[in-house]
Length: 200
Length: 200
Image 1 (cartoon, rainbow over the protein chains, first blue to last red):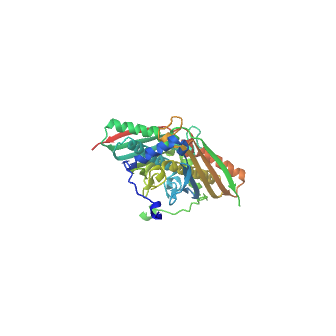
Image 2 (image 1 turned 90 degrees about the horizontal axis):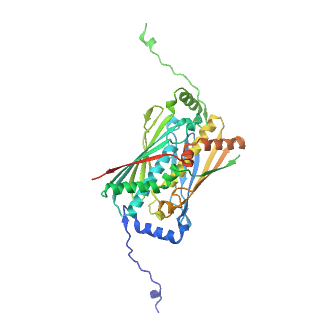
Image 3 (image 1 turned 90 degrees about the vertical axis):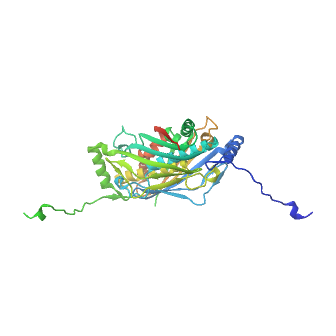
């Protein structure tokens, strides 16, 4: 028997359904995978921060754990955080409370798009406008009656789609209901802070 | 009388105290300003989000309101959000839950540094390591017993300083107690979502 005939590869065309460029076939495969082996759904995201100088700091994001293994990006994402001059910084990047708005916007948008795709609804445009009120007396420890963080955050969605308005409204509501960052901001999330001093 | 003598300018050298490159003189001036006119402490931060395609979106941060007026940066900050391929994205940036960790890291670091500077303590290095556990069954709506967001976030600080270890520990505790993003994640923050459909 000819060795060439015993080891073969062949290319199979597998049709993938993409809605809003979300691969819905893979999304449903992932959900099937989780149903048969729930541990696949456990993820651990990570970040490393470094103080640069004054109000300037940098956060590096690269590897994460998920679906049973650690994954690394091709390159790390590095985000500069700083304060504007009025808050004694040099504007090397958005400040931390602005990053929190970015996290919320990104999360609501992705959650909307993935759920919309799963339902086969085509979306043309999604825009969000966010704002949050904060009183610096909290951060500065000047009043015990003022909270440190946002008193309230407002998010306005604009969605362009051929789907009926009521359907889109329902999907925006679903995004709100399912978004991880909406959850961690609107509900209490335990944060454990530990500390190690390096001397020398 | 000579007109030249009636309108004069002069340059005065004002000594500014900088600790860890935080201008502590300006920090105390700001606090004095707030004490005499508390409205100065009211800030409103803003972000605009845009869906690009699939899991990819962009958040733009520029203007904010504070100390009685609107401020614009010299250039906007634009942050790409995306998912890694295992979560059906193309890795154009960190995902939203990772941005939330970046916001928390940046906020704890800046809060630490500003309070440390106010107390005149010199810091050499600050590093943070963050991680958060999340179960995708929440986001995907597969279980009502699983929350959407992080079940728990861990933050480990490394601080290098000549200050006594107990002093540094006390200042890390103060950062935790005063950080705006620590507050919005660990405590409930109201988020109002509104929706406008653009047809056509």
